[in-house]
Length: 368
Image 1 (cartoon, rainbow, N blue to C red):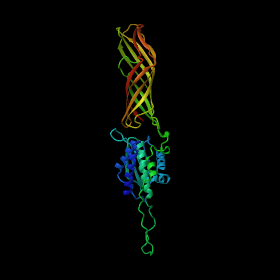
Image 2: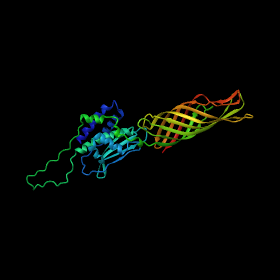
Image 3: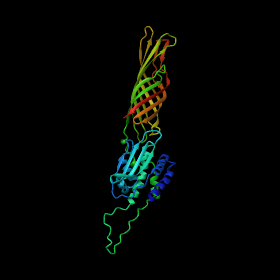
Image 4: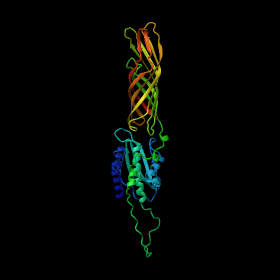
């Protein structure tokens, strides 16, 4: 319809003004205009029952209704039951992560769908809210179907009044400012409790660190949890790792063996970007456990066990290649809070933990 098309192109023009403050939302609005297959139909004789479906990390149905009330007003928001909305998460790095569909429900079917794509669920949600307001305003301007029979030609002096044409919706200056507001008002935001933690189990491999004499890896397992809030994207990991290594001791014919067993905890407050298949997190870590040293091929050698404690910082990279599978990699530094010393004789040190050292690691896991 000409009126709907003009409104869509006008919305694109308004979106260009937002680009300096919110480029991501402006790009999503531009995608709406390019991907829209057709305008909302004018046939609304059978009012359908709408629906709303979205992943757990997206705003829920109550947030959708609140957004429409805030954007379109209470009167237009009453027509929301005639809309069918669906937001889906798409995998892969080359394609957008989220796709939304909005259509009119009529006689049990959804018609005249519009598609929206964005890098985050919030972008898609806001774009669908804007286009839904355009559609609801147009639906409200459509004439209500008449249930009375057409006037009989036999009745003299009575002429059927012409059906008024649908009113084209125009944006006023105040409405333009309302559409351009970003972010959405607090009333339209999902409640923080709707953000459910996402748990995962993973296998770990760690190299380097202050408690190693060689490059032999340590192996471990861990569980982690992450969630998104309004300001933070916390990530917590708790696991256990262990390993052993054998090495020659300079100045002696014997060898030494060093074994480790420790708890490993990692905390990360932020993620960049907030929602994407690939992201980076700045983190801090803490290790607490024991080191055990013993002599090999040394007469009269005795083992010795000492407590081990260290802390450090790391940069964690995450990648979700498909579905629940997750891969991770870390690189960072470790500061020893205890430095146990192992020796053959008092003047021959077999090993002493470094004060500062580099560490790297990798993980592979499945989220639930």
